[in-house]
Image (tube, rainbow, N blue to C red; front, side):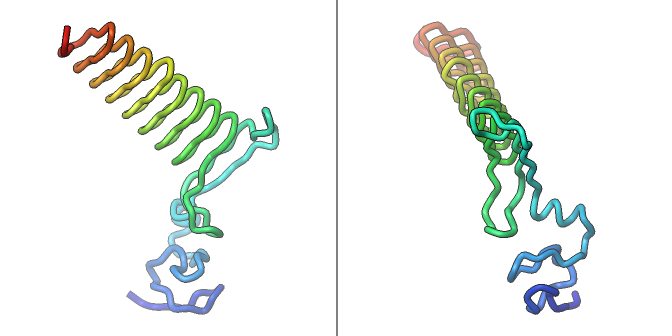
Length: 155
């Protein structure tokens, strides 16, 4: 492993680093793909709906702040997404799709939906999943006023 000076701050940086650990500047190593992966990307459509961008896509870390980017828009797509329609690792919105999804209608690994939840673990008025809790619950383990599944405790 060789060491070089950062072109931005002058600090010592490994020749394997994609970004300077001191200032976050790209080192030029690893090409554009490596830089995009390390810092993520962001797009906001110029069109707005109710004061929000129609489409906001945000992934990775913001190199200026060092914080995780959050997508916020009518349609939000990202690691963390908040919108009327949200798709992401963590999605919050009217219609939410994600590893962790919270919304009126939620679909995900863990889904919490006011109206409908579909997921490995689902909690909602109508819940469908491996573990389902809701007024109407359908799943391997179902708990609810109206429950149908492999195991329905209390019924």
